[in-house]
Length: 477
Image (tube, rainbow, N blue to C red; front, side, top):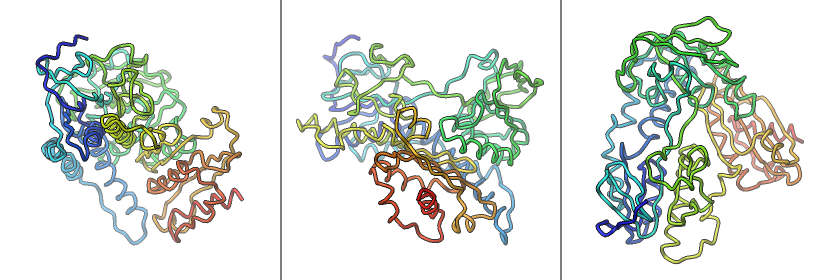
């Protein structure tokens, strides 16, 4: 990198990437001070989560959840989804890809939004759009996230498959869809596509089950739920090739022209109208000018718990550092990062827990908004045992008054992973309707290292699904 900065504009903090993590880092770094911040974004301020991931995906999933509950509630007359109305509601949550309100928020915080692609061209120095040079007095924060990965399967890229951005921004509902992958994006995409009227949906999963990083029962219940909706699941599937002779780029969320033929080992070739590839993410560090020595073999930009790289003026928050690819964790890291930058700028010591991102280590909560939902925090049993911890587990079906009242077909399961030596919770997993609202209580218990003897006195309200906590503790006693 060169370091000619004579003509550089100066800010106290420069953040590359205007998603939720970048916004939080900039805001916390200058809060309550006269420090200045620049937020560089080459697409839309608000980032992947606001326009292509969290917000549109949950807007697409919720109508199907409500319809499913209505269809399984005696005395309620359930109709059908109106796909165009669902898509219009989704567009309202993404502001039709208008980021003006996000820019207004940044302006109100004292953050200057700079449009364009950024490249590190020197110590604390960033060039935007190839010509505008800016320099940070204190810190540069990389918050560029990740992009969808497409495997090198013969013919797959040439077939112009949908990635997550296309699936969340679909404009037409295909009749036949293949979903490649078995993780969170694959399961959620399959759910809303089926809800919107896809007639034939096949999931091509390389592994032996869905949601392989979770407790096995979670993936099993989600698989059953998807099959009940009409999905065909191919496990242990080797996708050998894809052919689409009439592929044409028709824009994000639109069918890419002509049928697609998939060749899966052990299966007869079959045709679909669209493919959704959900096989992982790639860090968005290419072309960013980061010293290659700072990147790990996958291209992520690792940090310490202060969110700092070995170049102490350079920070990384959110998916780009590879610690926890979740929006809420990126925002958490950004809050820590902003506080660290502010303390260092003011010459204050980094004393106290607020200056370290400790939750990234075995305390990460996540929800899969499938049907049923999966909500988990902390370590799975396998992860805990692999770490050498002496653990015991407790499992029960979620069969309490609150769950039976919530819908007539409720089924679910819960599991706790307990450190036998300290009597504290290491992890918890819930699968069932609306269990997303259970996970924060478990997160508090994991982070707070609350003993199970103490949890016995945290009495769940009756009749709620939370009563499963009592059943888990009773099973352990």
